[in-house]
Structure formats: structure tokens, C-alpha cells
Length: 74
Image 1 (cartoon, rainbow, N blue to C red):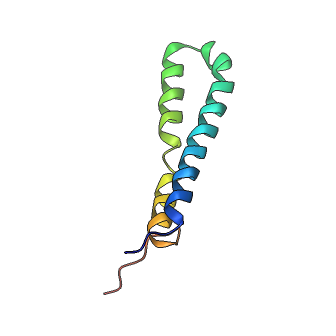
Image 2 (cartoon, rainbow, N blue to C red; image 1 turned 180 degrees about the horizontal axis):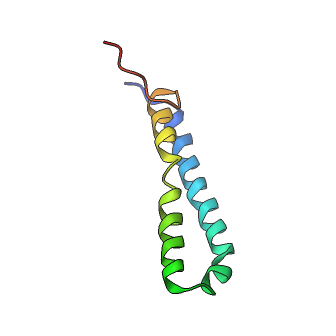
């Protein structure tokens, strides 16, 4: 297989996504810090998982050039 430009662009997009997400979370840390500890744990757990959701389509695009996984035709 021949390397494509999608992989380096995808890696940069992943790094950009992580950076933007970190900046967004850090901007609300002061507000979150005033909440009850259990609510803080829940918020950080959810925000720690949510950033992963756009990665699947991005990884599929890096491999195939399409944002959706190809359907199996039998």
C-alpha cells in the first residue's frame, strides 16, 4: 500500500482535537471546582470520554477516505 496524505493530516487533526478539548475543559475548571466532589468526578469522567467520540470517524477516514465504515455486502 502506498502512503497517503490523510494519515499525517489525521494525526494533526487528532492533536488539534485534544488541544481544543483540553483548553475548553481548563476554562471551566474554576466553575467545576466549586461543585460537590461527586459531581466533579462525574463531569471529569464524562468529559474524559466524550473527546473520544469523534476519533472513530476520523480514524476510518484516515484509512479509507470516507467518514463512514464501508458496509459488508454479501
